[in-house]
Image (cartoon, rainbow, N blue to C red):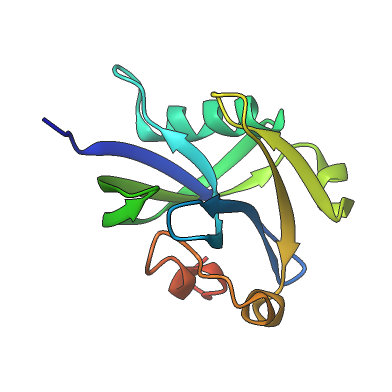
Length: 145
């Protein structure tokens, strides 16, 4: 039996750009973009999870500013059906030097390496890559935060 997963993702904004990681779905042969974050572990809050995930993935401590939205995400990845509840946060990086880096190297818990880059709205559009989870694009550059 498959289960619904709980995830926490985070949007970082600086100078009209957002930090997004680049990923790939081999079954669809699709490159896509997504905010940094991951699964919530049993016994931790979604805020604790995003703080831990960012530290584990890119080695950065953050100051969480707030919860933006909660998404229910039904999707297919690598040929498998997925179902998750996503808590989308916005935060600031405590290490201000990261904002000056054009890209940030990261590592998933399974050892898979990734690159996160700062994208303007126009740059995201120019990549022609989708941004997941579906619907997150409406808050990436929103004035709501």
